[in-house]
Amino acid sequence: MKGEPIVILLVEDEEAHAEIVRRNLEICRMANQLMHVADGQAALDYLYRRNEFSDRQVTAAGVILLDCACRRWTGWRC
Image (cartoon, rainbow, N blue to C red; front, top):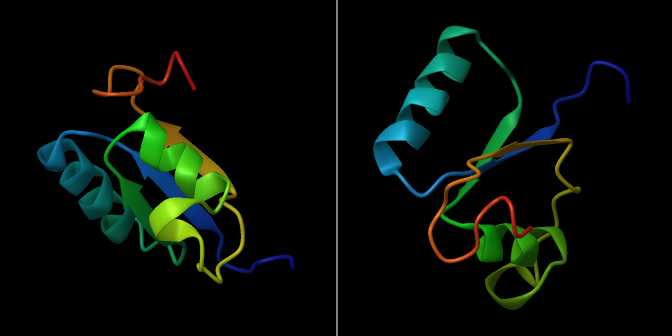
């Protein structure tokens, strides 16, 4: 597993902020997969493979970048 790409779960409700993260990861030439969700509820659904993520085949997120001020479910509630 050493040196293999991991999944980075980005929990960010502002699309412009998510784009900044995407661009910076590209600039750094990160080979990891970035999965973007818009709020804490979607993040929990992703992590527990519920609702729209129930059939996903990727491994669990290795890193979670969490905006603590998201709408719906905040990072503080998660």
